Image (cartoon, rainbow, N blue to C red; front, side):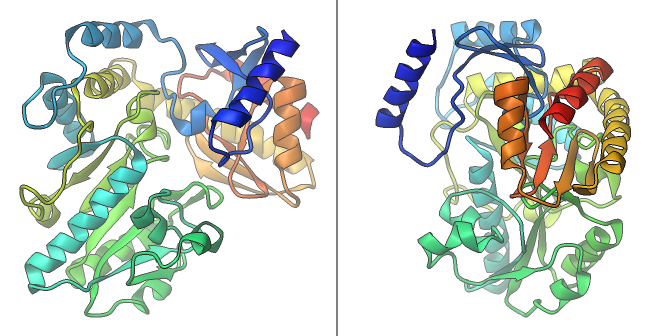
Length: 396
C-alpha cells in the first residue's frame, strides 16, 4: 500500500502544476466528519476542505438530490432558464435578504463580479470610468487578477504586478484609516466580515457600521466578502447579519455547494440594477447541477436547524480552546465566532499542523504563519471537539 501511495505521489508531482506544497496523504473517501486515506486510515477533519464541507461527507440526502439531477440535466447554458437556478436563487435571496443573485464557479469569480458592479454603478452615476476601490490590509479575496488586486498581501501580489489600478489599502477595524483614503474617485469599499487568511479577525461592530455609514454618505458600494465566514459558519447564515447592517454587494462560495464548485455574488438596492445585459457572463456558472447542490444545501440548513447547532458547537469549541490557551504559554491569542475560530501562537504552526496530520490523524489548517484555523464541518458534535482537543494536545 505504501509503495502504491508513493508511486501515485510521484506521478502527481510529474503531472500537476506545482503551485501547492501538498502533504504526503492521498484521501480516498469521507463519511460524516471523517476522511479516509488510500491506506484506510481514519482522520478527524477540522479543516472541511478549507471551510467547504459544511454538511460533512457522504450525506445521503445531499447525494441523492445530486444523483437525481445528474440523471436529468447537467448543463444548458445561461441562454435558457433552468429550475434549480431559480429555486436555489430564491432560497439564497431569502436567507440573505438581498435582491438579485448571479451564480459563479468560484469565490474569486464572485469577487470579480462584485468589483464590476461597483465600477459599473459609479460609471452609470458619473458617466466615466477611472474610479478607485478601498480594500483592507491582510485581506484575502482570491487569486485572479482583479481579486488579487484587492488582496492586502504583498507576498501574493508582487510577482503579478501591475495589477488593477486605483486600489488603496486601509487597516481592518480602523475607521479613520478608511476615511483618510476616500476621495471623489472612490466607488467602493471591499472587506471580509471576518478576515480568514489574515488570522481570523472579526470586524468590530463600530467599524462595520462606520464603514456602512461612510458608503452611504459618499454614495459608495459596500462589498462584504462572506466566502469563508458565510453559509452559517459564524452562527448566522451570513456574518454581517449579526451587526445590523446590510451590504450593497455580497460574495459567497465554499459551503454553498458542499464540495460542488459554485459561488455567487448578490446585490441589493442601488447595486441590484447597476449591471446591464452583456456586462457580465459565464458559461458554466449557475448550471442545473451546481444549483441543485446549492438548493439542497440551503434546504437542509433550514430543515436541520444548522445555525442553532453551529451556535451551540461554537460555544463549546470556544470554551475548550479558551482552556487550551490558558494552559499553554505558547498561545498568544484566541479569536473568532461560531465554527470559524483561530488560535495564535508565538511561533510558526506548520510543524504542529503536519504532526497533527501524520501522527494524530487530525486535519488542521493554518491562517498565515502562526495561527491554527478551526473550520470543521458544521455538523460536528461535542465528542468530535473533545477528540480534536486530545489530538491537538499531543501535536502541540
